[in-house]
Length: 252
Image (cartoon, rainbow, N blue to C red):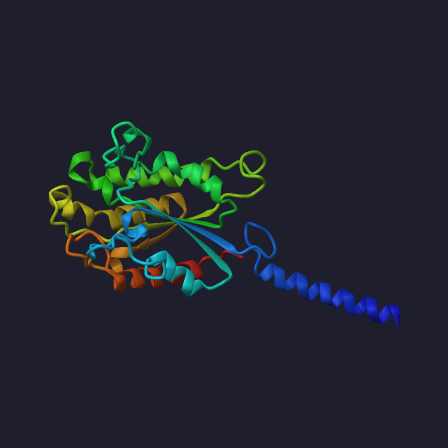
């Protein structure tokens, strides 16, 4: 009898171990796969609807991503309107006394946010649109270099033994943003330049050995009247595309 019970317990442990491995992520057996979406207003969900400036969580593309991937995943939204990939910007509308407490530059905030949310299996970066604003005087190649710096920061700055509590480096998915067709003077002269980001981002992702998705292949022009921001349907399309890409990546 004891031998039979021992065999049954052994089989049960093997089954449980196998099931746990199916759901294992960087956090270990049983931990959900954790994905941080790092972007600007089109990740935050800005909309020009009267009186309501943000799409609901289930409409925004990270919310669509969460629904499509299911309960085995945790999607962490880190969108900020006006965020750049590497340009300092303190034009934030805050009181002058605290204006310089908020820099829309996404470079200095990336590492603190990653460390705040670890363990992370994937960091999705969709930035670059704001870097092409007229005021920054940047070429598409320079905007690409800003995003590449973020990629390299993630790849090179993780020390599993010291700074990351034993967790490894998350995988990276770079998304080239939808090319703008802006009517605002802050963008309009650079609309054509935004269409160059897709091919440049693709080359950069390949050179750094990270995943890539071109949002412009799924959405040709932002549907909001400003020609910059996505409609609810476009958020759905993008979220589904990102979900399909994530599913193609080996994260278990």
